[in-house]
Image (tube, rainbow, N blue to C red; front, side, top):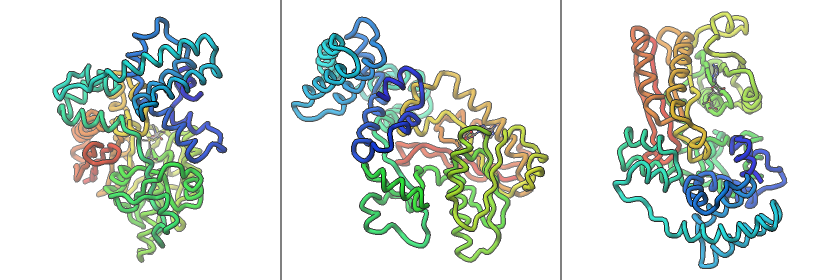
Length: 425
Ligand SMILES: C[S@@+](CC[C@H](N)C(=O)[O-])C[C@H]1O[C@@H](n2cnc3c(N)ncnc32)[C@H](O)[C@@H]1O
């Protein structure tokens, strides 16, 4: 059971999901994901009740069964729903654990159903502790958000994070729009080019990714690349590129400009650290738009001096540099359900320190009058505005901030993200 592995080994939930057999597809695969993500998403609230209902912490297998049952109870259903959840949890425990444990599960899930049904949503002016308990988030994170986003914003954000995330995909073909057959599983959204993949269409999605019709990415990813506005003929560096979502978008924009008549050569350099993510990047870049030349560099950006680029026969300076920095992922918690349980107090400040160092390094690769876009998928000001201010304090004589956009999920309707366009003077 994936959830037991997640509890035991602390592997990332989305990586665990990829380990499901390929034969498990369609609705069944969707239900597996929904149960895994739902149990993790609501773990705080369910756990609080469980600790009052069981004397000793159950072993991971049992705990996983109880968390899934708790999630199913929160999900709700008709008047027989709770009885079905109890029955299912008991049967699963018999298979995964033992008969005595199944008897325990029977008693605990019945009482869990009553306890969850008696829960009340917190009042409008709730404390951080009340919000954290009901919305299953760490209290320190809620406190942090209350200080940054007001009570209403924080509550809307928490509600957002607790809802299942739709899968969005960008339509990559310029020559044609999705056909009627494709629109049967791709639903248009308010963002042109982005479609919601209807649940249960795993096979169609895989085929469309493989032949380059779509790339699965959230609408928020367009913000940073939109500010970068890459053009053919420019030297372009994607400095933190893996797994390649924004590189592919850049390549597609370059290809579109060429189709529209701009005959200048379209080249892109995609850089990331050596390691497993570089394989994903390579695989994705192989699907980059035809007519765009993409060079892949495996290196630590912080140590990548002129020499490294010269050794690869690549430009040492660039007209447009994108730094999509590693971050706390606080903007994408609806998709990355376990991020909230991994983050520790102090992590955000650690990220900010690394982000500033990477921003300094990326800035060194920007040509005179060139553009540098700093972006994150965090909504925390410490990783966004404050990193950019700290950078400008040091580099203000050479760079100026031209534009910025911060998308808060509860306002934008898509994942959270921030992007800052800096211009070298
Ligand atoms: C937010 S992800 C980038 C996502 C990517 N832009 C996309 O759209 O698919 C941040 C990336 O920064 C990379 N990274 C972290 N430290 C780095 C460093 N010192 N040098 C180069 N890349 C680094 C990570 O490996 C990770 O792939």
